[in-house]
Image (cartoon, rainbow, N blue to C red):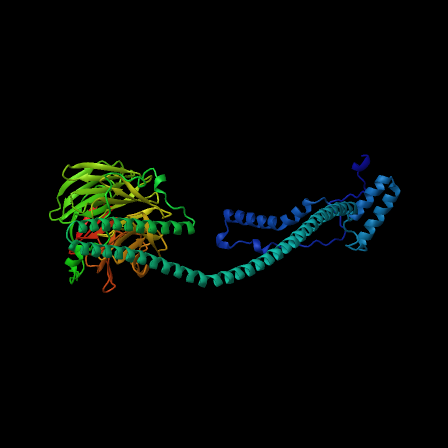
Length: 610
């Protein structure tokens, strides 16, 4: 055969059966481990044991075989030399090499490490070259990453320097602002005593002015009365002439006094930066032109006749109140209650646009009135008990006559919802308060607005005449109470102290104390003469909706949004609570004798506490 596939023979030897070369053969002993016990010497067990030993041998030799087959099989030294000589065509050298190689191998002159495998240098070099290329790529990648990291570090350093500089500037501005605030606080603190002193002086002067005006009016009236009495003692025509002159003089003096009070009030408003009210510019007020049917305000020297009846008496309730009767009066909330001045009759007004008259003794309904086009907010009996005034969200005041069983007069002029009303004790005037920040004095006889009382800067939530007086009390969402002279429609005094919207205010029977409540449930008592709060009770946090004195001035009721009616005893200072309404308690008042309390709530129920 030619080429690489040719076979080479070193020596031709023939072996005969009977040849005896002097070699000593040894007997191979049987494997002891393969022996079987005598009792188990059957064919099945022998085959199974042989299979197990074959599997053990295969498992023991398989890693070597796998390792050898995983990579390319290297050549041994003699094969490498033979192949090299054959490639080069050096056949004689090949024969000499084979002869000498086998002789040395037979004699044992060749060392095992010398006749091992020839290392594959080329493969090794190729692997090293590949590894070098990979390392170079990694170096380039690391250089790119390092360059980007360097740029990021520089950028972060710039941002750090910028923010550090900005922080220093903010810190400097903060320190400057703190210094300015401290300086302003010191400057403001230096003004507080002066402002307090000026305010006290202003209040003192205002009280003195009002007292002086009242004393002057009283003195003029007394002098006029004395002069008239003296002249009445004279006989004949001279006495009559003198009386007529004095009456004219008195009228002129009263007109001069009222004009002086009004001018002083306008001057005060101008100093406060408020434009004085001009009746001629009010489209709803015609006071500039006297109407032929206009009523005259009574004098302010009258005495409340109820005070004589209550003098020397005290409240009948010593052990508190308990629920005695419940009337389901309306389907919607009961917004207001009014008691008849002489009979046990109650009127309720509701959000269902109806007012109803009830008999307190048996709880039966007497009359129902409808006509308003929106919810009712207030109601009040005429001092004679023959008429009823109601207010509504439809911006009207309606006068109802019980004899005719109908509405006899509708008063329009407010621009927003009306919250409440109150009758003058003479029965010729009714006052109303509204969400439009104004209050109005209406003349029933001339059926027109006599005065619009402006001054509050937020909704006027309640209004009430002091009994047998021309003084009107209002409470407002601007956190103030005000006293007004209904004869000229100007504010005489303002009470400051509430921190939240005032929801209601009311006089006691004597007229020297006012009770008020606000939207955080704070109840305050005010001394009218001192124009200052004398007591403050926190009945919150739920809003207080309505306050009322008992006839003796010893108890104050507060209808609260938590569904309860709070009772404050002014003698003991104890605050108790009457629980019964399922929803907000909207109003509560004592009867004229003070022996029971009536309350109305958003649940449409009226409850009698006795």
